[in-house]
Length: 288
Ligand SMILES: [Zn+2]
Image (cartoon, rainbow, N blue to C red; front, side, top):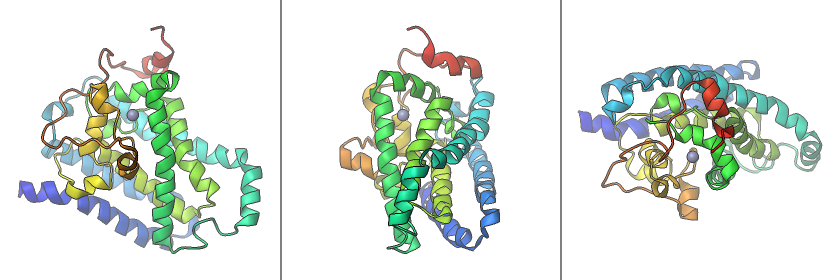
């Protein structure tokens, strides 16, 4: 029974979510669209949090290290706030080029040529391409790494640290994902499907649930792969940069999946996890 759960959890979660999104979102009137993330994310988080208790990947990662409160507020309040801020401000900043694109390509660059499924695939690939490079650069440029280090300094990998980002790092991540959607002239419904899918897979990347994604690990960046991105060892963590997909990591040679062994210690070697909001906010600006 345990094995059945282990191997079925991830495909059921991914394809079940896609099924729900493609059935629900096209039918929801535009005025209610903003409720879609709430209706899907709230039960998903609840289910994930319960499963972490019953089928943990690592029992010790379920124990709080005085980080739960901060992680929770960052994940449920600050990260969504950074996303909303970017959703609101980016179209204003891009008003001129956007209006030019809209004149040239009414109906969106992709959606005017393909059905919703192909449009989803091509748009997601483009968003992931932009996110991959931003994420890789945040690991390579020292000033950006100091912001991103907050996410990696966590001593455990579990659902509530999926939104544990420095505010400015969260803004950069949002821009990397929203900018392609805006530039492509993506419709609000397709954008909603992509953003909610990215939101739930963001949790599935970090969950402390002992599942096996099998061959899906060559398409999606599951927790099995993303835990390596949280390894204390830099050689191991400088891999698996995708957010939803792992395809660009495979294409650019940063795919890492030593299936035969397990992640030993999560965190950043030589760095203590800064606890508390203010400490975390000021952490990147400290004197080294
Ligand atoms: Zn990272």
